[in-house]
Image (cartoon, rainbow, N blue to C red; front, side, top):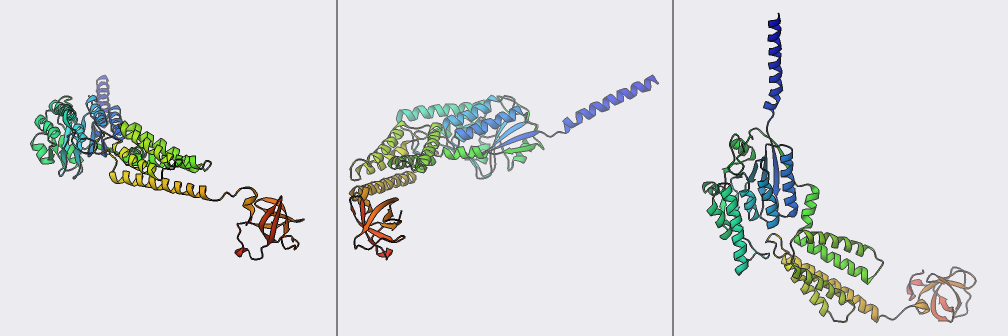
Amino acid sequence: MPLSRAFLVALTTVAVALLAASPAAAAPPRVLAIEFENDVNPVTADYVTRELDRAHEEDFDAAVILLDTPGGLAESMRDIYKKELALRNLPVIVYVSPPGARAASAGVWIGQAADVLAMAPGTNIGSSTPINVGGEDIQKDLRRKVVNDAAASLRSLAREHRRNVRWADAAVRRASNLDAREALRMGVIDEVAPTLDALLTKLDGTRTGPPKRLLLHTANAGVERVQMSGWDRILDTLIDPNIIVLLMSIGTLGIVVELWNPGLIFPGTVGAISLILGLFGLSVLPISWAGVLLMLLAAGFLVADLFVPSHGALTLAGAVSFVFGALMLFNPAGETYQVSLAVAVAIGATMAAFTAFVVTKLIQVRRKPVEVGVSGLVGSVGEVRRDGLVFANGELWRAHSLDGEPLRLGDRVVIDGVDGLELEVRPARDIERATAGPVS
């Protein structure tokens, strides 16, 4: 009896252990897929690094960056690839997809920093030569310094991950670009797969190369896809250089209108909000102070033309300063972050036209005869109220008829003149023919 009881206890213990272990064994691996179809900028860099941190903290088996980017800002690019390298226990896979996607410029660094770099058929990678804001090559000594620094950085990433170092150098110096098959054949990438599921199946059980050397468990993984939040997309829109310039111009015009006609409230409110949003964009992107000063000078010229008789010269100078300032504003920020020439010219012309309209109205007002006090009553229409009193322009006046007829209650009269503090009026039987304004 004791022997059988011991046997039953042992059997029960083994069964409990097997039951406890089976859910863990049956649980599929988890992979976080970070969709990144955008420029590389501070907003998108914050989104990617935040999600990579989440994948690490929540013990995902791997994080995949689904990459499709034309490039972007160097500082934001560094934030992303430094995060990829820093997460020592999390396999980071960069998968250039879907077909037609690209990993250009800054995207090459993000890919080369990954533990596994894969591409879908019909994608391409490369063209990493540093360029200036207008898309031109950087000149002379500055170009040599920038290109050498970029080439060394990309070569280092390729060497650490046992990929093609010579091509990494060519991608920077000669803007070399490869499709997926060429990149695999030359050792620039690690895998080519048509879909994410196919890639995860192919990678299962393999070990990443140096420096992390992590074993991948990705077959039949539960994939959680994440995208940029609505708030991230709003912020990403606000740092579009064309939007920033538009907001700054609206802000300037709104403030000018409010100064020209205090008390309107709406133009000043819209102008202040637009300026704040525009300044947010300026605080995020690298700017050229020459461009900022030119735009401030443009605003000064446009405001000055409201008070100085320059016959439009200041308005023209302001429009020209604005266009050049807008084009120089984000220098050097890369070809992705520059103001369109058409947008700059359109906004400058609109601001000039608006200022010219305001100046024209001011000149018309200055040339118009003064109509204040009792002189403004002549020609207007009033209404007889009581005891010979006429209501006109919001006030009650004593009045007498020029033809001597008595003033009857409710009659409408035209004011022909003012005799001291008494109005001279005549009957207005046909209001449509009277040269008068509305009754107040």
